[in-house]
Every structure is written in structure tokens, then in C-alpha cells.
Length: 240
Image (cartoon, rainbow, N blue to C red; front, top):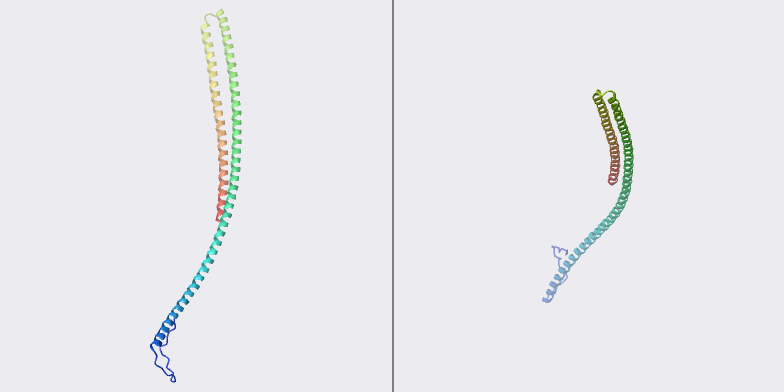
């Protein structure tokens, strides 16, 4: 700012002699005052510009430091992000390997159970075939016996015809009744045997299916528990 002028004017010296001034001197004095005011104004603006330049430089340095700090922080975050992505990839590969191992074990267990079930079912089928063979053999024996009885009946009938012509009808009825009883007894035993065999086979198949379902449920529950544990561990690691 231009210096303020004092209210009091300087007292003229007593010894100086004031000479009359010309118009040119007055114009020069006026021009000097105008130039002095312009110089004071320019010096004021220069001082203000220098202060603004200093403030701008300080602000620029502060912003530069903040920018460098943010840049370093961003670089650190990028490095941390890459480390976390690498760790996550490693953990994901490890989890996939463990999951493949668990699936392989489950598949092996399922295959083993299926093999055992098929083997047991094959054994039951073999037993059933043997029982069928035995029943067929018994059936053939009964048929042979029935045939022998028929033959004996014929022979007996022939013999009875010779001596007891009057009792042929009654004996024939008795023989037919006996044959019907044997046939009915045979058919009843066959139905009962087949029913028992069918019930036993159904019971064995139901038991094997129940064992297979229980084993599969246990395997799935174990797998789910392992998966839940891995998931909890992963969440804890992410929280840390």
C-alpha cells in the first residue's frame, strides 16, 4: 500500500527564500506526484502478487505432497490387492483339490457300496435260482410220484376189475379224491413257497436299499459338514 501522507504539512524553513515557480515547474511537480502514486500502486500490486505467488507455491507443494502420498497409498493398495488375489487363487485351488479328493472318496465309497449291493443281490438271485431248481426237482419228483401212483392205480384198477367188478366205481372215486388232494396239497405248498420266497427277496432288497441310502446320506452329511467348516474358515480369514 502507498504510504499515508501526514495530516500536518512540513513547516517551511525560516532561512529559505521561496522563489516564484514557473508553469513548467508546476507541471513537472504534478507529473512527479502522479508518477509517485503510480509507482506506489505498482509496488502494492507487486507485493500482493508476490504474496499470492507464495501462497500458490505453498498450496502447490501441499497438494503435491498429498498427491504423492495418495499415489503411494494407491500403489500399496494395488500390491495388497494382488497379494490377496494371489492368496485367494491359492486357497481356491487348494479348496478345489480338497473338493475333488472328497468327491473321489465319495464316488469310491458309493462304487464300493454299489458293488457290495450288486454282489449281495447276485448271491440272493443265486439262492433264489437254487431254490427254484429245488422246487422244480420236487415238482418233478411229485409228478413222477403222481405218475407212479397213476400207474399203480391202473394196475390196481385192473386187478380190482378182475376180482371186484362191483367196487370199481367207488375205488375210482377214492383214487381221484386222493389224486386231487395230492394235487391241491402240491399247489398249496408251491403257492406258499413262492410267496415266502418273494417276501424274503423283497425284504433283502429293501434292506440293501436302506443300507445304500443310509450310507449315501452319511457321505453327503459328512461332505456338507466339511464344506461348512471350510466356508467358515474362509469367512474368518476374510474378516481378519
